[in-house]
Image (cartoon, rainbow, N blue to C red; front, side, top):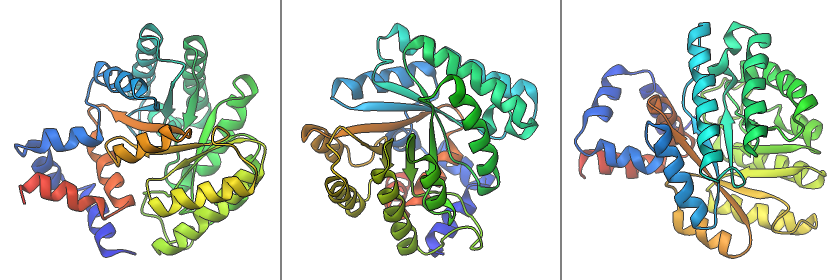
Length: 305
């Protein structure tokens, strides 16, 4: 594993590092490049600005591992409030929401997660948008896919995220290639028995999975800001006869904004992943770990070098 990636992931659980990041004088501005803010209003404002630039958005209320019913309920209510405000702002046609099942009670059982996710999906339908279930640690993948299958009985447009880092993902892509799938590289620290640890192997698996999804009849979403993978996806899409509107690119908020607009100007569908909420630290650390080179920008900004 990349030593810098290992170091970054170790920082995710380090309280001292978190305090430095949260209290450093320039930290707020740096974090805001990657995270829209802590309030729902911040997310709506960021989404409106991006939609105005011709981009689409997925809003991600940050929070994980609800270990009791009250924590899960707070997360559900946060999503319901977000969807109400999206509808009121007239943005729901261009903005979807990303949901982590761990945040809505997956640790309390699949039934709890399904019930809570169903409430969010129903609200999304009423608002005029849809939901994508996020990918988390490999230990939750089977459970997430079972919940997905149940949700799709009522809301067939529900999407799911699959991680190219996991060895199993080509098979999952084959099973889901006729649906809406978001393919990401993956940012969790997983054992070599279930995941590729070499970045080159992750990229190769990403391309394998992209081929499977593009060959299917579904709507693939390619979450990457790696210029090489963006070009490979474009080439493979042409090979499979996909038009520029038959798939999406998805990029993180604050990363290569000029490239986002360039792709959109060329006719591609570009969706920006916009996280928000007060639990931004874990997300930010994993975001940097996914592409350790991005950490250089953050560290230079944070410490003024």
